[in-house]
Length: 391
Image 1: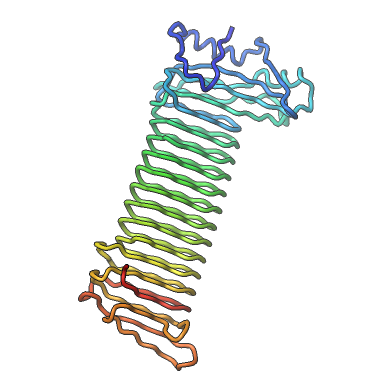
Image 2 (image 1 turned 180 degrees about the vertical axis):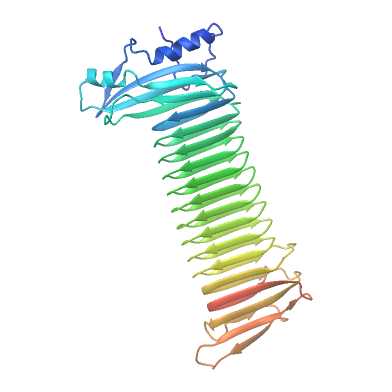
């Protein structure tokens, strides 16, 4: 008789269940002689198989459908597979289709545990599955591949790799590195101790906290980041980017949407095809460009400014600078908006207007603050520029 252990249980496996017993469970799960219990759930026939395996430092999962993996204070690996078929056929026909399907465990040289889905031998039966798995929290590495379905991972001390052909990805409490890739779906990452590499073909990306650098890319969707202890690279073809605190360099690119960075301790490179860009507290060099949108940039006191460039084709550029900062200003507006295209609160910045008093005019401004230093270049196609004192 096969012993079934439901995922979510916190009881330790009894010591009498040795390697031979585990092997028996793995084989019995797929045994055609074991009568499979099939139930009707609305428009579907469903069946479950549960089993237990010895723990492994590395776990690889190859399946289809949803995968939910959680780390717990246990000493074995427990999993439950829920299988589903449309209820177009009768119960015995569904049982015959699902009879040989299930998770087949195997071991690689070195001890890696592989859990691979065996699908039923039917061509167009619309088989679907959901795998719930519980592993020891201290598992060193988890690698999940699913052919279409959402994936959730929680409380793993090691690294996690997730790849799905289509579906959302959610992770939290991961101690090591994270790789998350989906062909379509949102990605939500909580606390991650290691570096993050995340790609989705369509959907938003949310990252709460990365202990190291992060690379986030989506074809269509917004990106939100709270904290990164390292460099950040964020890219979307269409959507806004919001960044909290980054200890390293920020590179943010959007084809259409706004960009906001609250604080970065090193350089910021921000490029918006069309959208506003706002930098609240910059401490390094700024290279900021918008095809059409306003730019607001504020340099923090004590920052060591290096050569920087702020540029927009249409919009306003407003820069706030500490009065003690030593730098050189080089600013221009090709077609000024209003009677004063450039306004400066620093008397050492000289503003010159070119053109008639009533027609289009270009405006240029240049000068040194506190004796000069790194050059801040500001370019505006149509609009205005303001250089303010930081308040």
